[in-house]
Image (cartoon, rainbow, N blue to C red):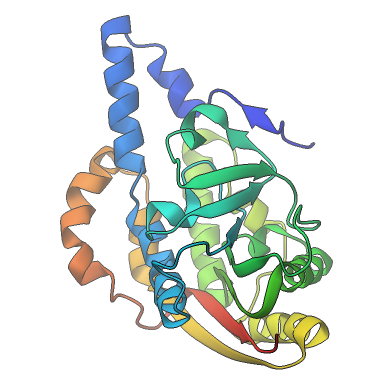
Length: 271
């Protein structure tokens, strides 16, 4: 079943509507603030920021960055000082409006609504794992179609059997508590997991077909034990930002093996 393109409420907003009216707005503002910075997502974007900086994109005027599968919470713009066009199949209108640095565009990564070579950089984080293997090939092709020669493509995804085992564990705990699959891990588990080598080969094949020459690097991302702790449902999740944001200077370097995801950075060459 396809999701509606535009939604006005989500689960958290429905729950807050049950509160007395004077507390409703305060609860929503706090929840948005608390979930507006998440350590796992911040870790996801550490190599993205580094690659954009190396490419001379950060702070440059007129740069065109496409964020594929960005969601309604600002995507990369909530963690890196950039402006983007964000593409996703649906957006929560109220939430995405709070992130003015992303321009939301409804569309599919399998047929990106941009012209060939329109972007200086294309970012696609934690999206490939939601797709069947043949769709992953199609998405990778679209990422490289959208980027100009000499541009940058960054794609990250959970990789390897250890990460998949952790997802199974977290999903089982969620199912025991709620009687249904985790809202996004359930989609992961419906498809074969990626591997680091598989991600490298996927991106290299798409880059070769579209641009020919390129430089590619793979970065291990987010220590797996830390990732599991950050996903566990605890009462303290309502204090996530209060607890983890002050620890960020120490957490940002936690990419030691075993890791949850791999981030592939491809620098295309040519005009």
